[in-house]
Length: 283
Image 1 (cartoon, rainbow, N blue to C red):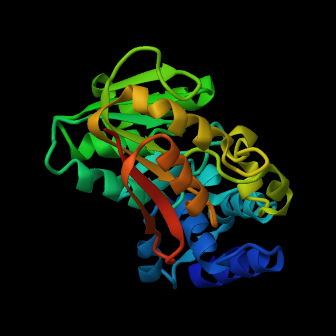
Image 2: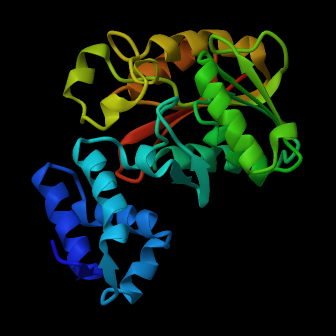
C-alpha cells in the first residue's frame, strides 16, 4: 500500500467503491465522507486535490466508506443533516428529513406572515426540524411539538438545545395531539404516509428509518385520516392545517378535509411538481 496518495486519487477510489455498491450520487457521497474524515468543508476539498494523504488520514475514511457501501444512510454516518439552511443532529431515532419537507415549512411561514405570534403545533415532530425551523423564523411564535416516540423527542430536544431555543419549544409525548395546549393557529404534520405493502420496495437507506415513521397503514392514510378528524377541536377559528402527503393521495386527503368541514382546501406541488401538501382552513 502506497505511503501517501493524492487527495483526488483517494476521492476517486472512494467514489468507485460506492458506485460498485449501488450508492446513488457516489461522488457527492465520497466528498462528504472525505471532508468529514479530514475535518474540512466539502468545498475545501477542491482546493486540496494535490494534497498527499498518509495512512493515518486514509484509515478513518475507509471505515466511513465501508459503512456507506453497506447502505447506512449518509446522514447517520455524518450525524447531521442540513434542513432549511441549518444543521441538525440526525440519527436512527427519527426519520431523516427530506428536502421537500422544507416546502412545508415555507408554506407555514407564508400563512403565518400576518401572525408572527402564532400558536403552532408540529405533530409527529421526529428530529424536530419543522418545529425548530418555524420557531427560529418566528421569534414571537408559540411552538408545541408532539411525537409518539420518546427517542425521537429526545433527539428533537437535543436539536432545540443545539440551536439555543429549548426554552421556546414545548415537547409532548402523545399519539398525535397533546392533552393540553391550544387552540392552535397552525397544525403542521409530516406523518407516515407510505402504504405498508410498499415498504419492502423502498431503498435500503430509507428502510433504515424507524418503521413507525414510514408505515401509514394499508392505504398510507391511517394517521393522516385520524389527525384530520381530530384537528378541528384543536384549531382556533380561521386556523390552518398543512399536511405533507404521498404520491397519489391528494384527492383522498382533500376529501377527508372536506368531510371534516375544512374550507379553502388546496393542494400544492413539491419541487418535482408532485401534489405533496394539502391545506385546509378551520371555521
